[in-house]
Length: 92
Image (tube, rainbow, N blue to C red; front, side, top):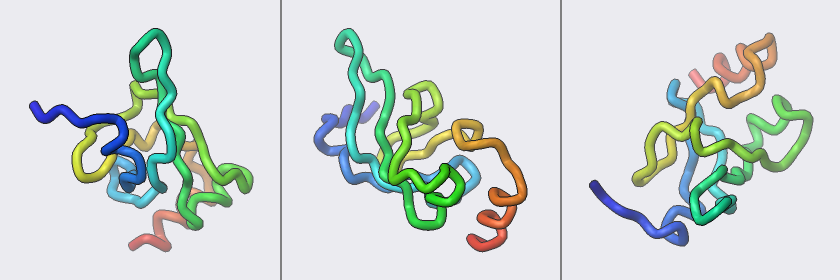
């Protein structure tokens, strides 16, 4: 197992488990000395899906892998509607 410092993870690119680019790690939220969630600065293609916000907080339970990139579960994203399908088509 590879152990990373939190400072090494900041700025890491975030992708969904289906391979879509989501954003970059901006900050970590700690609670009682444990990782509670991650603040992610979202990419331009995702901003419209989350109401124009520049970032989101993803609970740590939705993180699937941390290494050179971050992989989060697609279920952490807003529900799949027509806008999400458009995003998936744009990324193909």
